[in-house]
Image (cartoon, rainbow, N blue to C red; front, side, top):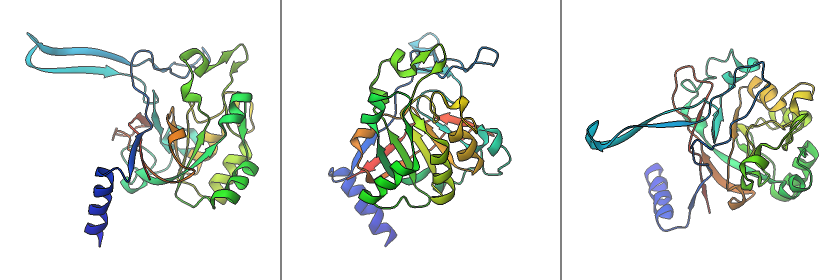
Length: 258
């Protein structure tokens, strides 16, 4: 039965009955990187340097070296990224069980609300209303917050002001609801980080990090093309690089969807 199931899956991918959607932004020197207060160490921008390209340095091969922070571009947040999740034995990119890197997706469309209010916060009431239309959010699944934020240009994407960034994200009680009452696999967003831009002022601060990682759950940031996914029915493959004791990693996130 397993062989038949996998054969049918690949057949339906081949004939287009199942679409493969790339939810990943490209990495280059212009990829937006989250900024921290100046007293903290900053994450470096993505940098690509050529090693050789069919020349004296390597006549038959082309390759590059690259450098960046672990949380650059479309990236994975492991539990070990945050102080609340630092003690999990399976909380880093090399110890997360691989079966957890594939999961069903619940896509919550708040693009209209986010267009109207850049500080929009997703709430548990919004999630419960969504469930009334689409069914309950099951344990072990992804919740992806569609804001269409990925369609913005670089300046509007980070949306900095004198009082900090202004980008949508989850409220504290939303994260409490998803971690304790729904026991999800993780939370994903189209913004540069999983928390709202003003989440440094919340109590607790940065709830998508503090609560999600504190409950041994994952984050995905800088996703794109969430508008191509149905509210339910897609499957997400999100496998970070297997960095020893890694806190996260850039990755290519793909969705399988009818």
